[in-house]
Image 1 (cartoon, rainbow, N blue to C red):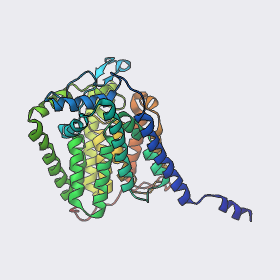
Image 2 (image 1 turned 120 degrees about the horizontal axis):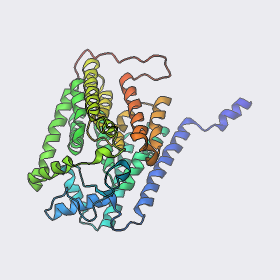
Image 3 (image 1 turned 45 degrees about the horizontal axis):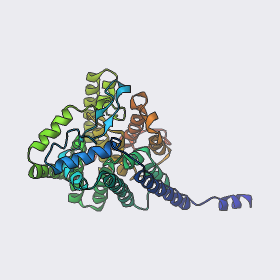
Image 4 (image 1 turned 90 degrees about the horizontal axis):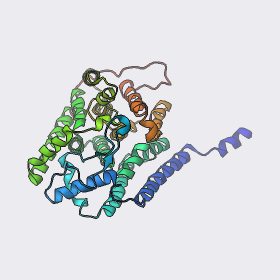
Length: 383
């Protein structure tokens, strides 16, 4: 009798999951209201100011990759850098039309609208993942530091998350062309993720890989027609003076080792990791979701710039399978607040990425005593 009452008093798993998802949505909605209404003044707009000034420059035919009065400034003095380093827009010219469109607004309205749009990107992507999303997965996504920081700061990571989710969704439906188009747009926005289609190609998903690279190249030509070839020269010049290697939120291997004073080691380790993951993809021919997870992580680890929040691009493929305690542990580390996460050279955000990589590589759960490599495919996929 007592055991029966105890069972009745326990909420069903489905109810707990719905409650967790409800709480996750509340966190996202609360983030929008809190930061959309937060007071800001001139010189305090940070990333919002950077994107607004970049859009304004594009409107007036100026260099969108230069520093202007409201361009955000970053204090790198604690890392040995400058106290007010201009944080210019480093996004490729593909995104300039978006910033230009929103920059017709005043900067306070630009900020509010960008926060709302960012939240809508995350909301749309989460809904695409479907009702099968576990409650803890919803919490670890929408209430995580990367999502809250992206929405509150005006970053475009929500768009990257949505494009990645669309790619996952379209591939699941068998719509290869649309999947490749979303991948191509994402790679055009963040070229360091070219490793994603490359690893897909090595894993046998050649049609999707080739179509995505083609789509990326086509999309990248659009700014040439709108702004002329000079816009890419301005962008490349800005990248050449990029100081973000010093930022501890940049968890790519090259800047990670460079901050320790071992630049050559960082380049070597990044090259070895990239080669090893390519070799893995070639030998074991993992399925699309697994190969995508490995490719996205390679794009974070092996590039000169890999922000911790890029893990959001990985999220759809990581959450496509049901989590066990190991997955939950890895994802929960992204609840670590930014000040703590930036300490110890950013290792707090690098560690969970490595744990997730191990999950994609070996696929088995630590609940079982052994870790088994997936078997090599006997045929080459054409997706």
